[in-house]
Image (cartoon, rainbow, N blue to C red; front, side):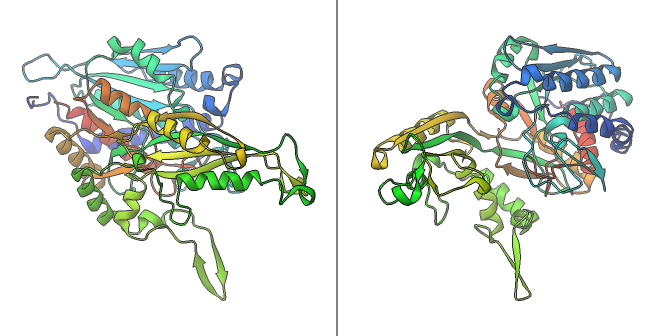
Length: 490
């Protein structure tokens, strides 16, 4: 791609001032209203259509975008039968067609669906109770990922105000991401001709290693999930009468998990769940480990207790920064995220329970194919059940991870320039342990596109958990940085 001279160079200080005013004047308030709406993703609200919360947040966001009067913008809420809605906006290109100027599209992505409430919120906070305190907007979904549509429009407006010529821009805001984006691919297929030839993707649904520089996500882990259930009885029986004869369904389940994971170390046993770390990613991981150091493990809310006046802390799996980073980005890990078959503690009598079920979440390295992993999980866990118990693994879906394409020279220069302009530090590169299914889809559909995967989920922001917050000062700088990168698109 031939480099070009922009029609007008974006003034970073002016752009930051403008987007900061937009955040303070309007966006924080709009996101507070958004947080108050329990727009849970379909996986956590089977009656999402009847409840109408997803429709409400889509409608509110669309109305706000239309009220901004962005020159050349058209907007539509697209609905396929039986699927969650998608908000689609388009901003026509303003730069002149000339030799060396790309006619490709910039695609901006975000989502409006949310994770469920979870427990453990501070007494003055709650998932649907927005609180703006010390530059942090608390509540479910503001940072993951309600802010994305608002930040995208604010960045575009910064270009418009300074009359910076820009390429065609498409915005795609979905409402099924937290459920694995299973509704998104049908929309991408239906809208493929309208998306055009995408040359740059700006995905505002990722994280940051700190709040001191721009961070580019260079990889995402995949996920294979499902429910493992062990049934040994048709009904509960007296534990004093039956234990020792009837095996515990919980013990059988533990035994099955031993096929999958070394419980002493947490290492996954099937070799097919691993892949080599590309040399470029290893070099970037070492650089990031040097920047973040022990914050890579200290940033989590470790449980602790006081013993004889000395504070004792729960220990991480490793205190080596590089290994900690690789563990959460390029190695498979197993988590149990839910359980069934257990009564509440206050109602737990001396009863041998008929079944135990665990919801399993297996994070996969970026290059491991998720569908194959789900099938391998099922075969591994169901085959040859101990005590001939009834063992079932019902796959809850899977999403293959993502490894970023090689960084084009113009893109690397633009990222560093934007980071220096707004943070006074170069751009950092970091893998994320979470999953954004869209990225693998887009890399397959647009293999030559550059991917600006970034976001506001920095230290202690705690997406999906209690006390989730949006770091507003960082969001302002990120919004301005996005505008600058789009202005640099060749």
